[in-house]
Length: 166
Image (cartoon, rainbow, N blue to C red; front, side, top):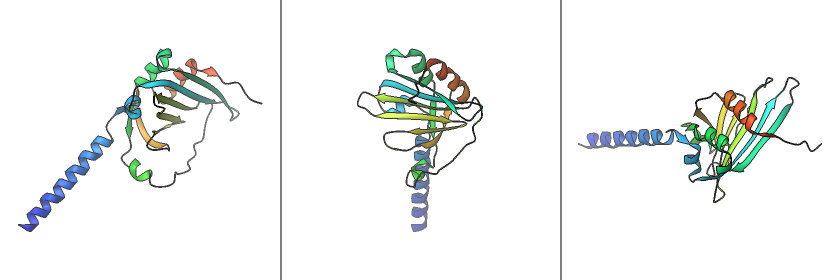
């Protein structure tokens, strides 16, 4: 009788862990990651050139004043990586990627009315996100009707050049 009780407890724990994993990795919109209605959208985008340098553009607007940008943000669905709770316990890894002309690095941030912020980052070929609870970028996958590069093209067109301080 004691063995069957242990098996039942073990199976219940496995089922609970599986349910928690499915819940954590479920698809979420940026608004759901933020946990509130967005008040502002902020995009900073860099496009790399042949010489290894980059051009920078920016978009910073109230949520309801930038319909094209908010439509792009609303179509994105984020899936958090199952290992992120473990990764958040350790120091961030330093990773590097080789860039080529036309590659993008962009940050798409939504800010709520209470000041909370969620940021989605695309760097060359990899997605990551930061939420108020993480305070660092963690890997994720993103579903959208466009690829990361195509989304970069659309954000580039919506953004304005940033003036150089030099």
